[in-house]
Amino acid sequence: MQIADKSVVAIDYTLTDDQGEVIDSSEGGEPLWYLHGFENIVPGLERELTGKKVGDQFQVSISPVDGYGERDAELEQEIARDQFEDVDEIEQGMQFHAETDEGYLVFTVIEVGDDMVTVDGNHPLAGMTLNFDVTVREIRSATPEEIEHGHVHGPGGHHHH
Image (cartoon, rainbow, N blue to C red):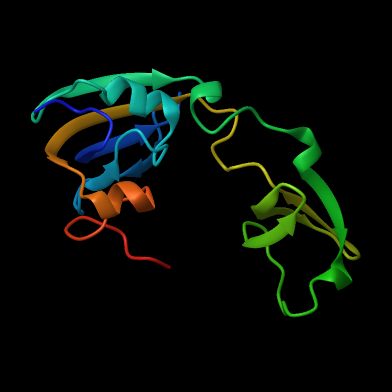
């Protein structure tokens, strides 16, 4: 069976940056399950996986435009510290969700001043080349429910949050 739209696929992967630092890996844990053709994973990786079979292993380098996008300078902004009423300790690296005109974004605190907090709404991997080392573990056909919901259920599936 080859990977095509509406395939449910399990992959083992290691993601590194251009310096060879490991950013994320399924090694030692469960493989990543996803529904193919539904943008569950970055576009560049989904494209590379099309037509692959169980046991296939490959490396691919994905440019930011096919990954998490280029960095958007406008998403970096200063917010008055008193906007964070319910947070006792604001620390660099903290992440929180905020509703914006674009929908929900995850902001990361990059600098904490006395009065102002600088936050960045870019995805942490925006602007980065993503180097994936991938092995295809399993492929099955998606169920009608999975196709309707646009993601995996059941074994290897993520539950609704």
